[in-house]
Length: 298
Image 1 (cartoon, rainbow, N blue to C red):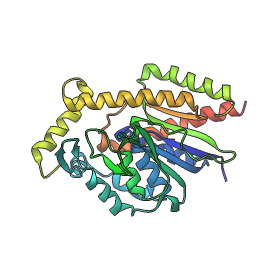
Image 2 (image 1 turned 45 degrees about the vertical axis):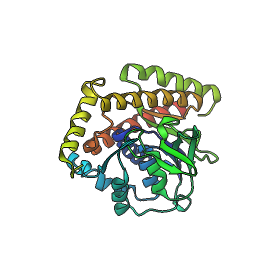
Image 3 (image 1 turned 180 degrees about the vertical axis):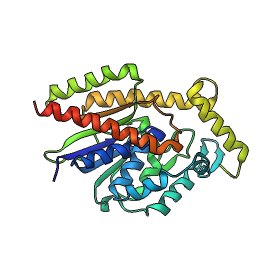
């Protein structure tokens, strides 16, 4: 068997499709992924991988158009959300059946945030999709999940890159894929700090057409004018919070290999660009593995 890897997948919306290509490149180069931890989109991709069904799910995700993705938006316009978030989970269950996390072929955990009790919740047992659904509950967008007396929202609020939650095994290396990295001009400094810390430690909506049209327009404006409306401002603010918390996580628990994709590469809602984003993840992982091999062979 190849080098064992404890893999950590960040939140980041549609940019999380980069996780797929990165995983494929890891395996293509002979690395053995023995455990996975993920937040939000990282929890979805990580959970599908841990179930052994990522390839099957990928074929479905890569063929979805923007219109088809919007058809999974079950609008409800509640007091604390815009979308129920049940329809998309049910669709994934049709493609990949639910399973107990403890029975998955690969160790897995997902992270959510309990806003009622101000704490992190880690799912490493129970229903896979219940864990994913809690982890992807973007505040003010998806319906929060009630759980054990708490109210759960997106894990990115408290731990967007759960480096401290992935299961470690003897001889493994820690690999992190962060798809909400700083903009391009900040990346060099972020990587320098992470490598320095690692070396110091010697380790490393189809039924409501008018609403669907509004969402598409706001998604477009998120990139062009982040301060123009409620939706884009909230989205940008949430992304920046995740970015800062992620940078802190990387400093506290430096990985042996870091893939850091700038958040301005793609938008959080570019779900129709899944295949292109995945290819980007594969390219970035290949570069990182080349750097890692050069560094460790000296």
